[in-house]
Image (cartoon, rainbow, N blue to C red; front, top):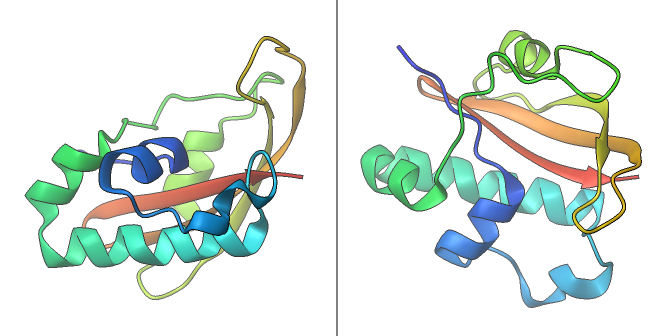
Length: 121
């Protein structure tokens, strides 16, 4: 079955899961990412079809970072139901500057879905 990674930006825009303090840092904090992940998992568990439609998830199986690291495969491998793990990789921040910087995504499973929310270090 196709597994999906729900990205932070889609989650916050699509269903308004972001707390008003998310703008505290331009790209959010680790604590905010973890809180958003919990909300995304709850949304998937409550109504998977509705959540996936709202979150506009992406298949991550073939995604690699700017250094060639297979981050999608790593996320699929480490994600476990009831446990949050971290995957670090290099990714450009949104905007004009495409220089990759360190990013960390918290990943977990919600049923047959892999959910992830990241923040920039």
